Length: 179
Ligand code: NI
Image 1 (cartoon, protein in one colour):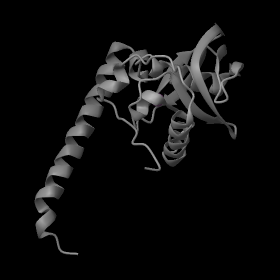
Image 2 (cartoon, protein in one colour):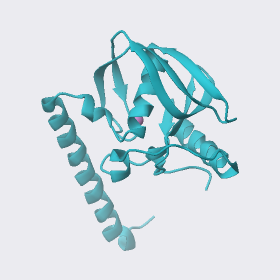
Image 3 (cartoon, protein in one colour):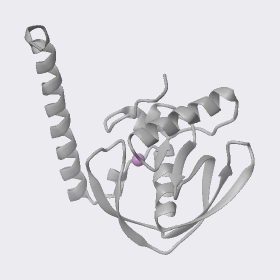
């Protein structure tokens, strides 16, 4: 398999807190490669392990043409506030203005096993915070107020019903369809 299926809203793995990565071995590197393929395919600028069903604390990203993997990340400092329209590959087609700290410092481990500290501002900062949320089982819907969240969930459920109905119709009609 060259890519990974990106889990969608409703999949329980997206609401589960992931555990620390303990081994960076060949299998792990291969998984990261596959996650990059899925991320570029989507396309997106970040993809967290739980989004491909892996309950481990790491994510791949490509910000400003600089791809990276951040393992066991921790935000050590956050300041400022920044409102920005934010989307998620696991909540496709919807985006919301969300306020988050503008600048962060984050520590973690890179793919070579080295300790890293990143200073990130604006979009890069938001990308990292969004992916760390995934590692904590948090989707961007949880940043909305109650009314916004209710509306978003209604919309997502309606889409899921429509997609299910279409799939069911396709499979029933399958045998009768002419080229
Ligand atoms: Ni996301």
